[in-house]
Length: 296
Image (tube, rainbow, N blue to C red; front, side, top):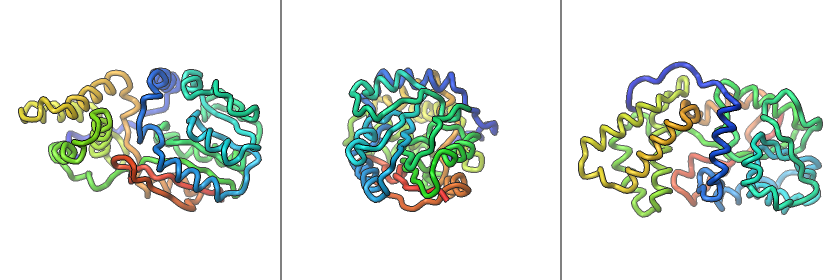
């Protein structure tokens, strides 16, 4: 952990800000790489879980992740699928025009909207859904899902967990180690990995907050004090990504992912974790397990 203490307020979910964020993301969604989108190994994990559960009559897909839609259509061609997402822009960007099946319908609402789809489901599926929530609504979201899922039904998602191993590591150590570990990756992929490592290490696990401005200030200080690294393409790309994220969407980076123990506490009232699988085909993929949960 580095920098000064984070503010203790917890960022509250704001639908209008989230829509703006996703409208922006939709314009370049096809260029996104893991861990932002699922990798081939991640999809193998999803498929492994889908093939071991009972054939569902109704499937709820949180978000419009096209890779998951294709998997559902491949494995359960006769199941009725409801896409639940509030962003028309992402719906378009994810290829809804492909029209996989007449059994695929859309519910264009916020996941916590007081309206409901009006039916229950045997399977709920969505990639990185918890990363789209502020921590003050996580438990309410879990209870909301439990309301729509049949007893014994499955909930499958990929999560991001906090990495405790970096908690007492200085920013300089993280940067120097990452420059070595990431040097053979494309600059964009390397910068994304370093960005996420810095964000993770700056988090305070007790309240899971992050003072994002501190990351930028400490990163700038490192560049000022280490002339040999100022022209590093990876560091320059990372710095631009940090500044842009703070300027456009600071609310997305005001909190950190939970540890696995914290996550288990969030879901434990309504779900139990049956199995988890970890990929190995992108950097730090061990922090993004795909998990299969069942409703109590």
